[in-house]
Image 1 (cartoon, rainbow, N blue to C red):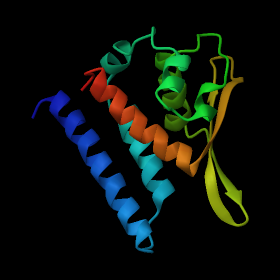
Image 2 (cartoon, one colour; image 1 turned 90 degrees about the horizontal axis):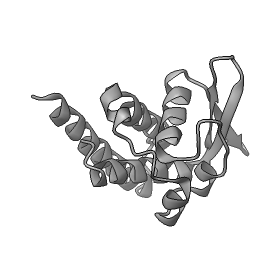
Image 3 (cartoon, rainbow, N blue to C red; image 1 turned 45 degrees about the vertical axis):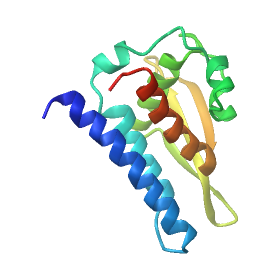
Image 4 (cartoon, rainbow, N blue to C red; image 1 turned 135 degrees about the horizontal axis):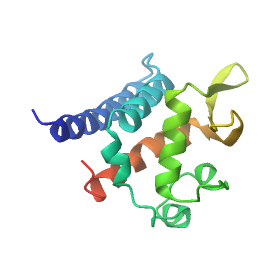
Length: 152
């Protein structure tokens, strides 16, 4: 099996697993939605090789993503390297792969996730807080975008 087939298959299976988790949640089953979402992001953002990131468009702006319904919390930031899709994915990849994560809890329940980036000078230069709904939307929108851009 070719590498692109493996990544494409992983994306497909991630989407199917997310759908199954949603069904299980709606039936009151004990499943761990946030764990699945983090695992999904780990695979979707970290599994592809550098070539994948090299092919992400710098011309796709955060405003474009906003028009497509991406979570607002992801799109309200400034960064020295620019406010575009490619940089957003780089920042998310760095934060997730280096476990720059904090689980957010409200009233004793997991409510979301904080992700941040540490730059080469060891300074936090980007941070985002995502609700569980934002995490779901991020995974779904990312899957849609990489299919649309034919990156897999």
